[in-house]
Image (cartoon, rainbow, N blue to C red; front, side, top):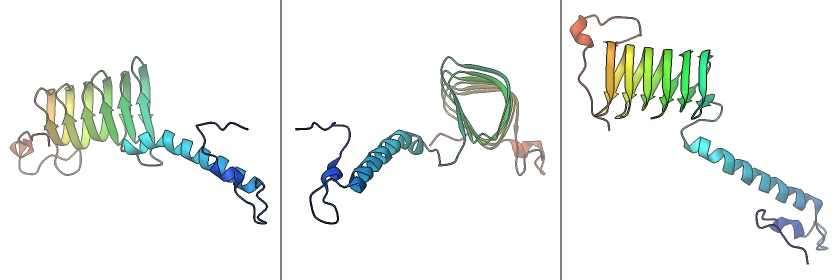
Length: 182
């Protein structure tokens, strides 16, 4: 009696072939193998898809205890910083974890800061600073959300319309009240 591995469901291996002889069909065995490989691939890619990443997006993760210094990051949809990064970047999203730090210059659409950011930060859409987050330097943003405990200091400017244009009604029009985190 042959033993089957508990990791692969090979029920199709003994499927009757088209002539009904009860023989093992090479096609059935190949299909079972393909199904097992597809299930394994789906299991390894499922966490990435459920974490908000879309298929085809480029994502760079700088893991804990990793130091990335003196680089220019471009064409990256999402940068996740769990270690330390000294760089310039133009991207869509930056996510800095509680233990992560970014020093340098960044122009991005959305920033989620749980760790440290120091430098020039231009956020075209929304800047979110969580309770453990600290942002210092020259900061320009479209919208800002600061959770209780989050810190924002330096040269701060709210920008309406396209980045780089000043509000038409004067400097006071750029000031916005803090919004609670939803």
